[in-house]
Length: 290
Length: 317
Ligand SMILES: Nc1ncnc2c1ncn2[C@@H]1O[C@H](COP(=O)(O)OP(=O)(O)OP(=O)(O)O)[C@@H](O)[C@H]1O
Ligand SMILES: [Mg+2]
Image (tube, rainbow over all chains, first blue to last red; front, side, top):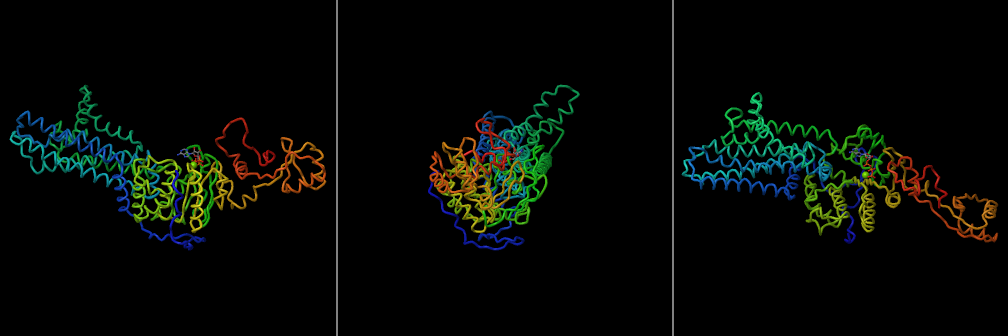
C-alpha cells in the first residue's frame, strides 16, 4: 500500500483516571458507554445480511422460482383448458415453492455457517460476547426476512392462479384456504430456513449443512419410494407423510396421503423441530470454542 | 488492565498454554513474545472469551469478558486470523460492529480515516491487500475508542511505512493511558515499541520484565580483535588487566572495553591488527537463547543449529 501516512487517532486529550478497582490510572473515552442489548444485535445482523451478495442471490432466485414456476404452471394448466372439478387453484403454487425452499435453506445456512468459513464469527463474538444473543438475533432477522419474502411471493402467485383459472370450474378458495396457502406455508418455509440456520451453526460448514438440509427434504421421499417390502409398509407410510414436501403440500390440502398430519399440524411439527435445533445450536455455541 | 491467573488451555493431549500468570498494565505497551506455536494467539483468544480456558482465569478490568456490557469500548482486538467476510465492504463491516455496541455511526468514518481506508471504504474486503486487511482489522479494534487494545502480530504484511505507522500508533495509544498488549515473534520489533516484555515458550512463562531491564541484562557489547601475533596480543592484553576470550575462528573477544583503548595498546606494543571491531550482541540472539529450549518447530537446515545453551554462541561473531 502506498497511501500517505494516516493521522493518529483524533481522540480527546489524555484523561488519566484510576479505573474503579485498579491501582493504575487509565484512559477514559469521550464516547458515551452504552449497555448493549438485543436491539443492538438485531441492528447489526440486519446490516450484515443486507450487505452481502449471497442474500440478494438466494432471495432473487427464490422469487424467480416461486413466481416464475408458479406463473408457468398456471399458464400451462389454464391453456390446457382443464376441468378443475372443484379443486382450489392455490394448489398450483406448491411446486414452485418446493423448489424455492432450497434457496431459503441455503440462505439460512449461510447466515450462520459462512461466519465460520470466513473467521467473521470471532469478530462477531468479540463485539457481542453473549453468544445466545447473537444466535437469537440472527434467527429473528433471518426469519423475518424469509417470512416476508415468502408471504409476498405466495400471495402474488395465489392471486395469479385464481385469476388464470377463473371459469375452469375451479373452486373459489375459502378464507381458511387462503390463510393456509399464504401465511401458513410462509411461516413453514421461514421456519424451515431457521432450522437450516441452526444446523449451519451446529455444523459450522456451509456446504456440509446445505447438503444435510437438502438431504433432509428429499431423502425420506426417495427412501420411501424404494421400500418395496410389505413388512416396511408402515415405515414407508410414515416417511411419506412426515416428509417435508408432503407436509408442505398439506397447506394446499392436496396431501399425498389421507392419514398422518393434517390442517395446521405441519407448522407445529416444524416449530418444535426448529426450536429443538436452535436449543441444540445454543448449547453447542456455549460449550465450544469459537 | 488484563490479569491472567494460572491460565491454561489444553487441546486434547497438547498443552497450548500452561499456567500463565501475569498482568498487563495500562499506560505502556506490553510486548508478548514467543516463537511459533508458543501459545500467544491462544492466550489472546482466551482473554477475549473465544476459547474457554481448561484451567485458570483471566479478567479484563476485574471482569470476565462475557460479562462486559460494552465490550468494544472496553477492549479492541486485532486477531491473527482475518475476521472479515470477504464479500462485505469495509464500511459495512465496521458499521455492523458499531451497531452491535451502540456506537455512533460517525465512529466508522473516523476510524476509516485513522487507518487511511476512506478511499476504499465501499470496496469489498476480498479485494484488499494483506496490508489493507490488516488496517481494516486495526480500524475495527479502534472503533469503540477502547481503553484496552490487543494486537496479534499487527505488523504482519505491512510495508516499512506501515510498520512505522503502527509502531507510532501503539505508542501514542499507550501514552493516552490505554493498555496496549501486542504479540510478535520479533524481538527487534518489540525493542522499538514495547516498554514491558512478556516472553512465553511452549505455553509457559519465560520472562516478565521491563524492556529496559531485559536490554540491560541481555545486550552485551564487546570488541572483536584479530591479528597475526595472537599469543603476544593475549600477553599484552593480560598485562593490561584485560581478559580476552578466544572465539572459534581464531579471533579474540573482549567484553566491556573500548576499541580505541585496545587499538592504542596494540600500537604501543607495535602489534599488527587485522580487525578491531566493536560489537553488540543482538536482542534477537538473547530472545532465541531464552526460548531455545521451547522452540517447537525447528527448521533443520543443517547450516547452523539453533543455540542450545546460554552463552554458547557468544563466541560466534
Ligand atoms: N484449535 C486448536 N486445536 C488444536 N490445537 C491448537 C488449536 N489452536 C492452537 N493449537 C495449538 O496450540 C499451540 C499454540 O498455538 P498458537 O496459535 O496459540 O501459537 P502462537 O504463539 O500464536 O504461534 P504463532 O507465532 O505461529 O502465531 C500450537 O501448537 C497449536 O498447534
Ligand atoms: Mg499466533
